[in-house]
Length: 232
Image (cartoon, rainbow, N blue to C red; front, side, top):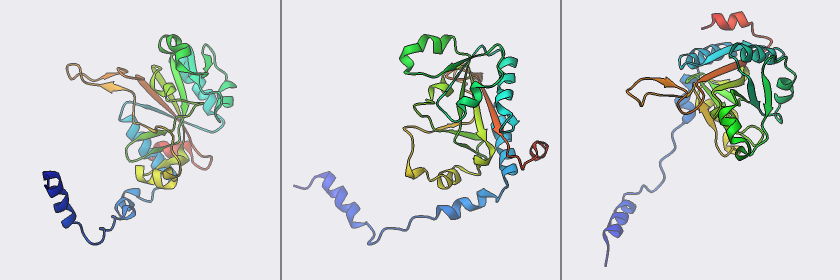
């Protein structure tokens, strides 16, 4: 005896087209949003977007970002900075002139120093894979050497961004970097510090993660920092 399920499935099969409908052209959809921008223009748009979400952006050079990070830690009273030592930026950070800030290399697993992580680590430092100009978002791909804990638990999150890896849209980032070829367990899109308005509809920062997000944007040598500031 035919069940209701069989009748529904038969009806769906009867209306199925002989040939599948063609997939829409995503290139055609996203092309107008790419804008044909230069690195300077994308960086300026990203900076304006993420700052609107209560983040800080500081422009730096490839050689100068570690010293800038050290100064920012001193200005914000950071006594302990957690970072991934086994990363490309790790050795540069370890050699920076920190004064009053102790560097704590991530050693994992988190269970081994949970009390220290939640109560004695003032800030975490991570690299980024890139960013999205359209939404003012950072792209992070956590790894064993630099897990997402560094960006989610400490009260302050410092993020290092290469301005050449700022993409116009999320789609452009996926296509340009060939994400389908291999992704981490999770990818993070961060557009500002942690915030909530659940309590009496009052906006509060740091409720479920960092209360401050500070981006150190490395600007290519062929771009004038003053030009980037003026492009906003």
